[in-house]
Image 1 (spheres, rainbow over the protein chains, first blue to last red):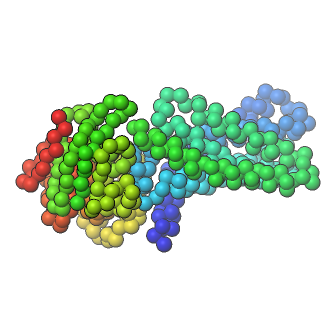
Image 2 (tube, rainbow over the protein chains, first blue to last red; image 1 turned 30 degrees about the vertical axis):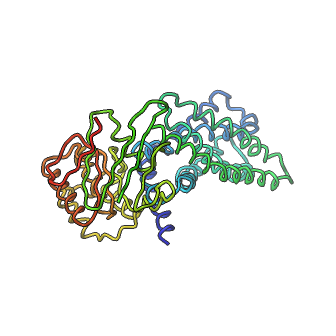
Image 3 (cartoon, each protein chain N blue to C red; image 1 turned 120 degrees about the horizontal axis):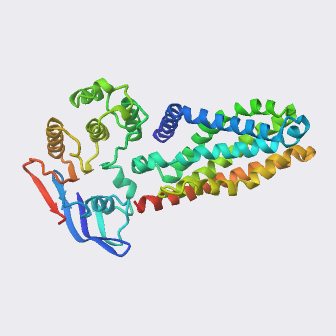
Length: 223
Length: 202
């Protein structure tokens, strides 16, 4: 019972922290929309062209703009020693990482969903495509949270080279793009592609707590 | 009782300290004294098993801590020299978080009283980032009372504190040791406590 209370306590703290950082979320969404505008200005107003490449563009920009916020995943809690204190109060690093991933998914990625229907209007996407986009982004963003946790924990001691974290995330997110954008032409294979995406999400959800916890331990030992 | 037996620590190949033997019995206050960079903080981190030493052991109540680490953690409060409170959250949010995390039974009235003594009550709904360094440090030290553990390990507890707060802190140490608690801290400042033991790192 105490254990469950502690888990909810951590979620409440994350919710409060993400509420105070809500400007960050808005600026990410703004970045997303501005880059869409830039694409539209660069390509011209050919409706058919925008419609055919729209989905791919939206997905790539979603990826880029959600990597912007990943750097802050553990940075603050690591620098001020909260991670160590939480560990001392009986939480393993694996559990802390898992809770962080879930709270990042719930409080940062899910609010991002509201921007997708709005962005789809700009590309004149059909209802079917918007639906596909939403479903794939819900699964894909969980994968992104896991990847972000890994890359952020790898870069805890790296104070100079910020882009390397983004590179790691982008490299591993290629399969997400392939399956998410491919789902439109899938037709009757729709469910099988969804299953593949869920499979990838589960693999990363299984790996990333252990990987991130190991990286965090290494970083704590080297400070 | 905390027993440290032949503890040495190397960072890569550089020796930080070697062959330290001390025992801290119930009711003892120990200060670790030493110049900057003499390894005080590292020593505390090795005791807490954050850094792992290859030679020497630490025993808590007769058990090797590396085998019973969560048992050991359950009995200590560690105040590091960093400010562990989140800068974006308010004072009361931080206190509630620490309170829940250590499943403390302390009542809200007691918390208000503590805040009153440290002159922090007016900031209860203020974010930490607007507080001064001394006020943040006092808030950190509140965790000692909140968590009610037996062994207190502190790193530079006297930093940023004013004279009145230093007096309160010394009195808290003495009260804690009178209740069979153990205090171990690293600091340059030597407080006027009668039964202070000193571990010199120079």
